[in-house]
Image (cartoon, rainbow, N blue to C red; front, side):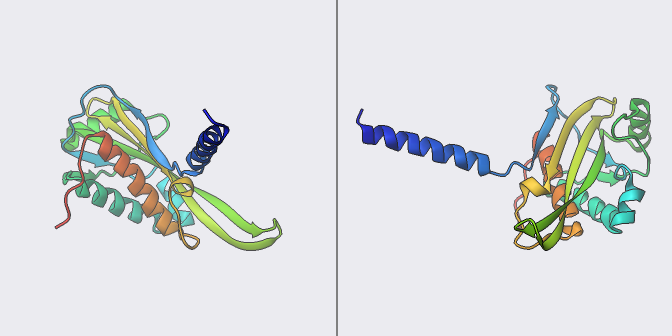
Length: 195
């Protein structure tokens, strides 16, 4: 092997590694059960700590609800409904999940968590350029028996590119959509063709 060929191989390897490091990995499936997922009707509850989030940005809950429903419908799951209940996202009570699913005849229930992250942009670490809000959205899908089926998330700071500083409304929408898409794909749902 000539020195030039070796140089080319090393060069392309370094460029490939650089491109992989620069790629944005904003979301994905953090857990998926090995069992077959058969969920036809899904319920979802308010965002964890919804009242606090709406205190920061008033439309957070409304945007979340509209986006999660539209994304699941886009993937062919028309029977998704809001359930007015409170369950701790970090320590969910499976008895409450089972009773909600039984009461509303649901095959599964989604618990959600959203965090706002703030980034201040400066030039040369001195001159302020602006402030940006991003979101991290996490969804957990539980079966009607209370078993965790899927946990997925999306981080708009790492998974979305914006030409201008995004508004909080944009990041709530994009974060919810990204996490919802991950859940849909993990369930084996396919995006409906556009008419």
